[in-house]
Image (cartoon, rainbow, N blue to C red):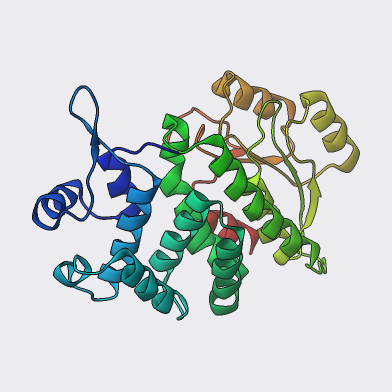
Length: 289
């Protein structure tokens, strides 16, 4: 079972740590465990409770009323709300609960409802990406275990692959050719897969090379196909990031190079004119139009 700090609960639920402390004292809604140093810690059940409270509060329930619910009554109210068309934040809460419980059925329900209500692109952009950003810090600090990370990442990956498989690309005179790859050692593929979907949806040709590609293989493909763009994502890349970007820029001067991911966004690297950092999904969409 995972262990969370009160700051983790704040980040995942949107409820301020100060507010949670007041609720603990006034309503005894949750009872944290204490470390030897007297720090509050919380488990999966505590997090699920706080997420359910956040969902009900966002729907207009008063905390004084929520505090009187039994766990069964609380669960019933959440189920009733979840059967309705939900806004983006509500779906993010539901995805978080699905991840904690390793609940594939709940994940499928959230994704199917969201895709029908908002469309695939909006679901990924406004629900899945904020969800991944919200829990990303917890993965890095170890608050969420590898099993939960792998579970939810693989389910999202499957959804993206199915969506890509269903696309029909009709290139025209404005279509460009993109080579998409992850460098050696990089396996976090979700951003690259969604980039693939976005580009194909706008009738561009994509040569998708996937995870952990040796640099020599990238050179081979680029020399063979002469693409207009090279696109890569560096999320957990631990080597010399600036050195890798320089190598990309020096070796591929005829292509526009696009890079994204935690390792490059906001890092202030000195980049050549033909290289651009993609800071968000909208930037890639605008470029692909």
